Amino acid sequence: MLLFSRRRVWALILTGLIFFFLISFRRLNSAALSSVGLYPKNGSPHGAGGDSLASYWARIKPHYPVDSMRPLPTGSPSALPPVQTTFAPESATDRSLRLDRQAAVKDAFLRCWKSYRQKAWMSDELAPISGHRKGHFGGWGATLVDSLDTLWIMGLREQFDEAVAAAASISFETTTIKEVNVFETNIRYLGGFLAAYDLSGDARLLKKAREVGDMLYAAFDTPNRMPMTRWDLHAASRGQMQVAHEHVLLAEIGTFSLEFIRLSLLTGDPKWFDAVQRIMEAFQEQQQTSHLPGMWPVVVNARKMEFDKHTDYTLNAMADSLYEYLPKTHALVGGLLPMYREMYEASMDTAIRYNFFRPMVPDGNDILISGMISAKSDNSHTKLRPEGQHLGCYTGGMLALGGKLIQNQTHVGTGEKLMDGCVWAYQAAPLGIMPELFYALPCKSTEQCAWDEKLWVQEVIDMAGLNNLDVDSADAEALIAKKRLPKGYTHIPDARYILRPEAIESVFVLYRITGRQDLIESAWKMFEAIDQNTRTELANSALGNVLEDKPPMSDSMESFWLGETLKYFYLMFSEPDLISLDEYVFNTEAHPLKRLLPT
Ligand SMILES: *[C@@H]1O[C@H](CO)[C@@H](O)[C@H](O)[C@H]1NC(C)=O
Figure: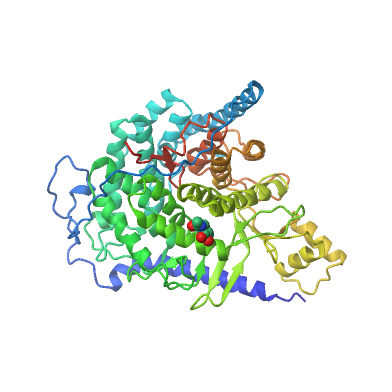
């Protein structure tokens, strides 16, 4: 009989909780408003007024107007410490190899772009096998908007002009979907327009950014000015009152600062700055009162503004970009808002101490992985879940960037090891592509960690919930063969690869910061593995299982493949001054925004 190990039981409980959460969360969305009796007596559309040139959403009168608007920061931005290294002159052979690789990335992009243009123009996504259209990001042309700045960066001016003209006609007055994910809309659409504007200066793009910004701002019209994160845009458009949810994901409420502050700076209208500051000031107040002081839990209560109550703490999925935006906002505003640097330092102090672990791997590489901590009532009892996530690979770039900006070498070194952890996870995997989720065995010490095959097999058996198996048995060997586990991986609960960018993102950032030449080869290996295995006749597709020799494809190409993944690959093989990290900061969808620099 198979016995469940304690870890297995724990994983099952957690899965159950997540399931329950998702179910109740979906119900909450519709139940929330009626349960608190906030539906208006009549749902009549409310008064137009003010500026007739203002966009549709700006003309809708708010139920809960802001009484005192926080003014935009004034003063002159500081010259923050340099981020990029000084690159030595490159040889003629290195240059021609680099340019060949860059051209290969551009070709991959163009192939996808042409198919999108031909088969799915203006829809959110192209399905890369069937050639169908998909529309779950609002139906406003997610791939089109997400790709604008990539087109510009790759020097595809003709395609850029055509795309801008098309994007200028998108209407944000309504949507094809029932519920808008405010976070995704912010990072993909608002971020996409702002970056394309910052690069090209085309006024049509700032106008679109403002329209998206006005729409999103309507999601903040709640009694405590906390946003609806999953938002019934149709109800808001009809003038229904709304109140923020009690269970929201950390990343979904904490990822506005780059886009909102940039939009306020570009338009001179402080309303977006005010909106995000109300959130982030509350986060700062509660930073040291959580169960893992310095960090905030994955799930928070927006209605009660309780950001410190739950028990799971991670930099990975569902939390990620809240942390990522702290040092990046510090960079964006040239140090004019010290709270972002303070929050960054305090959160990384905790993450470095608790969340990052050194995995036991065959060559004893000195690498790190970012895991999850469960913490009870105070941090006297914490438990590490040694899970690596593809999404979590952004952490390397974040810490290296943050470390350069605040001149802390510990952060830069930690970021480098986290990035090396993702490169290891790619290289150890059968096809050279890291799976979505995996587990590893944390070393007892970060100083020393010799490979111990027996210990690894034992962990694989435990993770599989098969503690009746003998480490030396043929059954154990068969188990490892059946699970196709690369040495060092102990369990792979999700073996998909969905064209995600986070690993190449961190390789790119670390390359610009350190100039490490081996990263060029690592990046190229990643690109070849990904492009070869995901290529369809039309474009590139997400993979169902990277442990199989011929992985099944899922007919999906999210807009981030063109918006992020191929952009970072392209920049990896460009001159280091193209989108210099000393002039731009990337939002979490790889849209480069101009940093405030001293004049
Ligand atoms: C650098 O960061 C580490 C980890 O957060 C911290 O312990 C250390 O005090 C920092 N160093 C300086 C000089 O601030």
